[in-house]
Image: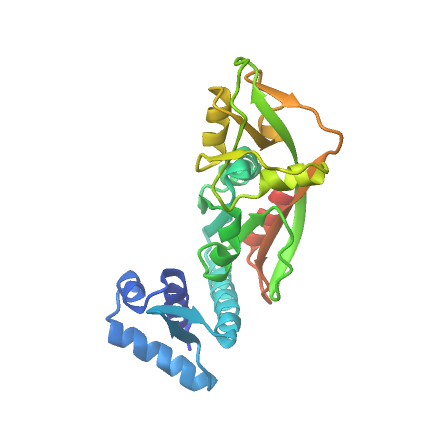
Length: 275
């Protein structure tokens, strides 16, 4: 096995398809299948199972994903140490989170690192919280940030802060419909907030796709919302409705456990912990 084998395997995990991965790395599908078969033959185990025409990792495949990423990181870092012109961080890293923290916390928290190290390539992507664990497991991100502790095997967790949630209405519109906006039907922030206050939630719901759609809807007087306090506390467009209990959720940074982490990984962790 070599770095080409590791990268080929990771590409299949990221794309969820042998044919798409083959196109991505410039191999024919038979050549890629042969490469994976040889890995499985060496390991004496299967790395993938197929269900409903989709590929999923076996437990051994999950272990091999962690191993592959660790080996590639070590390889690339070793080479960089012998580049006489290399005097700053470089490399690609993918960070995924939910919309209320991506633009307001994660990107600002890493801007200084990016400005000081223009050779690094940080990629930011927003997902619904319910999808983020699958994003990490399928190798579509190197780090994810959740608002709960997933408590998963082979995943490291680091608490980098917490979010307080508040109820908001438009400060301009006096008559507001008694409807509460969330991202989508799976978003439980509103219900959890009222349950925490000891109140049952049986109001009408509306869905606006992401946190900024929710803010727009509330600003226009279309309804109310439960929102991260740091997004609205100094904004005169919104009025915060006070409640007895402060409802908070942790911000939990998660990444796959590895024997080796690159210098860029450590710098990203240091920057995010400081937010």
